Length: 384
Image (cartoon, rainbow, N blue to C red):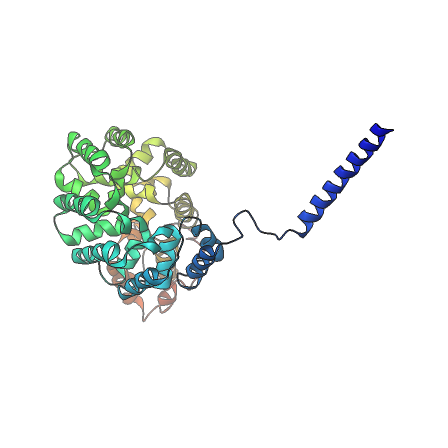
């Protein structure tokens, strides 16, 4: 009897505990583990939303790594940034990327760097735009990181104008370990016979190429030589720029798109040697250009391969309008059908307008509408 009573009491106790726990869950406020904010957390979240333009989710995430206990320093920072042209959008981007920036000392940490970049020639709207690409630069050491890297780059590009061009392309190069990454990669180019002025050109147009892992960079350089590029020529650096920006998978996918339109491996290599920048185009852009030129303009794969510059042209803004103009003129027998379409599509804007638009404006006013892209181009009926 005693054991029966004890067992009954124990079971009732378990039921009571479960019932209480379920009731506790049902009545517990729906907050996650970090949703019961301290006073400092509440101030931080509120400040990040109202003063820095962060979303609620961004502010909560940022409050895990920064605590604003007093708004005096953050207020001074935001006021100072505004004097250099930083808008609330810029500030939101900076703080969301690097929340601890809001606690930086405006005068000791941030202003000297901004003034240094201004002294290089980065001013006006360019200043906040460039610095927003990599917020961590504003927290890097000016004396130990930024100035030595800038001096290194300037040793190649020579002028502030060239330097600014390089920084506009990739400001993140400023905080790289130049001795561990850039110096070995530059040494690789030199070892293969690339002239100093071409190394400088690569730094100006795409410094990020030299941030590639050293073993991968060596692979890229060797592959480009095997494709027949000559290190002494400018096209070698263009090829390095393109190939270093694309993954092996991405590279093969773009080649497959070209081959699906009839290009062989030899045709691809020939076109790439003429214009390496064609591989910078997206798969969609390559497909759109090939589709239009072959199925609407009536060109053969070999025609396109001899002028791969066409991949760099806009289908909507150049290729279609020019073909539409030629279609109008052919329909009126104002030009012969024996035209080199590839050459005309690749010719300069000034030449094409003078030769085929302004010359026929009075006799065939439709060319204006066609050139403005307001006329549908159905394709050349009998080819060219």
